[in-house]
Image (cartoon, helix red, strand yellow):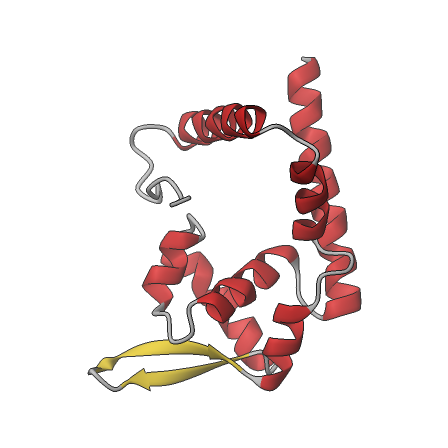
Length: 148
């Protein structure tokens, strides 16, 4: 039970930090991660972003819409295929992309900086295994392992 308590505590801490980020930056943790990835891959297609986030595309649609409505992202027609769209950051989105103070990733970066590489690899493998077990073999929303 102690490990499960740690997982619940981590989930609660992520939720709290996400709400704090929403108050200070105007984006939640998942929205911030989407902004960061669009900043790293300007013009990314939503389906590619969903895969990177290990998220079902329909879940991502709501996140993208909120970011567009808030003025952080724009949807643009793909010049190579007018049926598809690409996502890019606005000036406000670029500011969110650059912000680091008080973010989930800043906390993770701090911990990773004082953790050995083998410990990080082992922890990542354990978390992936838990996720796979939670998703189950028949979960249609199951995504591939994140590319590292």
